[in-house]
Every structure is written in structure tokens, then in C-alpha cells.
Length: 566
Image 1 (cartoon, rainbow, N blue to C red):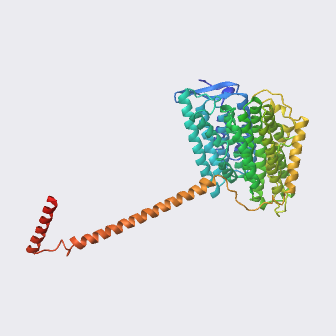
Image 2: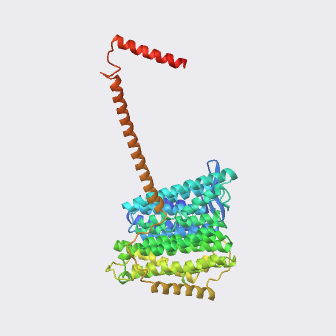
Image 3: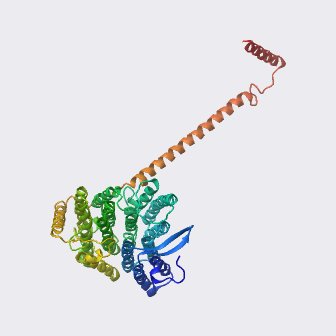
């Protein structure tokens, strides 16, 4: 156990961000603004002070927990989480309330804590910290829809946390170890851990919590939410289940599920939320492949995805902030007065579509290369088809219906300076990672020699994307947005199950009411019948003459004698 004064490399970066989250509520004015911007940068500095190996331990519950364990993979995710906290803080600090900023930073601190957790106990503590403060971020949406979505989100993550906890306890009791190490889902406890993580990764059929809750947050809250929960789960899968075969199928299902629902969706932020499920599916599929190249692809794509997805949510958030609208049917023509937001949104759209010279191209193609190396032809072609679908729903549909198509008549001002600065920084990063990907490749967990810009790859993806774009505009009349409601699998338990329970309880209540009513009526009939014979003036209650009584006694004795001898 480390004692005495902590050296810089022994300082848990998550604690810095947690301290900043606590202080945000105590300071005001320029001090708060400075704190919001400086704290993530200090956290980022601390991330890069953490060396490889276990650095900080402490006793807890009879175990020696590892609060701080460094590795290339852990630093990579912690780096982008800390930078995301800075970008989100810059985007939000002039518009968001202090408690939303504090909750968002505590949420980010939980994600960074998971990155450096060296044991399952520490991992679970920070995992639940994320869940708690992400719920607060959703509730900061401040309306009835946000409160209801936050409750549903809380129920789902409480369930996932319980499943994960039972799995962890079972693994610890059976192995005697709390270390985070690769495992296979070959018994009930490892299956429970895998299921608990897949809930956070938004794998169907339990993915609707994401698309239900994220669009109900504020403009800034959705930016924070887009970055941490699902990508922390991706890191957990890399650490605990690399090469788990079932993840290939789960990832492919997520990829196409996200595309189909995003194409059907009318709300701009729900389109982007479904797109998160789609993009995380690529990462989950790569983790299922499990080779060093595939795991590098999953980590690199998670890094790039956090940046371009945050940029897309920033762009959509500015539109919502300026117009109060997020449905595609209410928007259009905004490029006239929001050129910067439009350009930044297009950069994000090109990046998520894996357009050459953007970050998505230099990271997603690593996953495709891994499928080729392993001879997984079917997986390769399915992912290629999915890339065309991504270009349809996020690369074209989102910017087209929000900023172009018909003129909605709206003439809002462009983004405030802090929101604009955040979008410009993230746009530059999307392009920089596309043009100079080598510096990101050097941060990946495994060394590799990979050329993203081989002529074959570039030509293939350009053909794929350009023909997808042509198909979009040829089918534009069919793509016209209408005011519709998209039913997801959560309808089964949010609506159908609720109605079944309601109707069952109503039928049971009616049955019990009829039973009580029948019982009461039977009791009344019995009482009336008894009153007829034993009540006042009844046959057996009135006074009889001695002769009548003697006659009855003789009859009864005769009857008894006959029965006895028979």
C-alpha cells in the first residue's frame, strides 16, 4: 500500500475531476469558468503521469484493491475521456447550470476511474458512480419527459449493476482473485458479468435506454452522455472478454439495428443516438474477433468516435439551443444563418461515414482489415454494407434534413462563441486524425504496421460512399420525413407489459369485488334463512305445547331406532 505524500504518478486522475466537480458548486463567476476549463486539463496531465503497472493500492473488504493501474490501453481511453470533459465543459459552461456541469464532471470522473481500475471491486465502484451521475445529467433536461426517461434509465442501469455485481461476487468467490483479467463466458458468473457490460454497451434488446434518454437531456448534457457510458463498456469488454465469439454476432446485430432505426427516425438527436448503437457495434464486433489488430481497431475507433459523435451532438445541440426544435420536419434551410454549425456538422457527418481524410476512415478500416486477415469474408462484407448505411443516415440524412432540404423559415443566429470554439476544435481533430493518423496509432495497445491509405481501400470506400449518396438522392421522395413514432423493443415492457399488468390487476380487482359481493349476498341469505327458523317468531324459536313436543320426541326416537338396527 502506498503511504505518505502521493507522487504525481500516484495521483488518481479521477479524483482530480471529482474534486473539480465538487468545487463547481462552491465557486461563482469567472472562478467557476476557470475551474470548468482547467480541471479536465489537469486531469489530462495526471493521466499521462501514470506509468504501466499497479501504482496505488489500498485495503478494502479484506482485499487489496488496485486504485490505479496503468497501461497503453487504459491511458488511451482515459486521455480521450479527459479531453472530452474539457470539450464538453467549453461547450457548456456559459449555458448550463452549475449542477449539470458538476454532475457531468463527476460522470466523466467515473469513466476515468474505470479506465485505471486494476481490480473488479474498484471497477464496480466507479461503474456505479457513472450510472448515478449520468442519471442526474438526464434529469437536468428539466421537463417531464426528461424525468420519466431518467427513471427508466435508472431502472435499466440498476438492473445491469445488480447483474454485474452478482457476476463479480461469483467470480471472486470461485477464483479467489479480484484482478481484472481476460475471461471467457463459460459459466453463469462470467455470463452475468458479460450481460451486465452489454447492457451498458447498449446491445439490443436492451439498447432502448440510450435512444430513450439521451435526446431528453439538454444540448450540453447529450454531448457528455454520448461519450462515456458505451465507450467505457467497450473498454471493459477489451479488458475482460477479448476474443469472445458471441460478440461478433452481437456487434453485427447492433450495427444493422442502429442503421434501420436511424433511417426511420424523424428526431435529429434520436438519429444520432441510434447511430451510437450502430458505431459501437463495429467496436464490439472487433473485440469478438479478438486479435491484436482487431483490438487496436476497436480502441482507435472508440477514440475517434467520441470526437466525431460529440461534434455531431454539439451541432444538433446548437440547433436545439437556437430554435428549440429537433425534429427534421420542423427544420431545414438553417445553413443560411448558421454556416459554422452547418460546416462542423458536415465534418462530423463525413467522419462518422468513414470518408477518406477524416478520422472515421483511418480507424474503422483497421477493423475491416482485421476481418480480412482472419478470413472472415462474411463479416467483412456485412461491415462494408453497414458503412454505406451509416453514410445514408448520419452522413447525408442528418445534415441534409437539418441544414438544407426545404426552407423552414427559421433564421436563428449561429452558435455562441464557446459552443463554436468547441465545435471548431473537434472538427480540426476529426480532420487531423484523418490526415495524420500515425500519432494515434502510436498510442494503441499493440504495435502495428498499417497503411490506411492504400489505393485499394481509398477507391473501394469512395465508390461505396458515392453510390450510397447517389441512392439517397434518387430515393429522396421515399426518404421524406413525416411525423411518426418509431416503436422500439422497449415498447414490449414499457407499454405492452404495463398494459398487461394493468389489465391483470384490474381483472383481479373486479374478480375480488365480485367474490366479496357474492360472499356478502350469501351471508345475507343464510342469515335470512336462519332468522326464518330460529329468529323471533321462527318455527324453532316459538313456544310449543307439551303434546307437540312429546310427538317430536317420539318421532326422533323412532327414527334413531330404525337407523340403528338397519
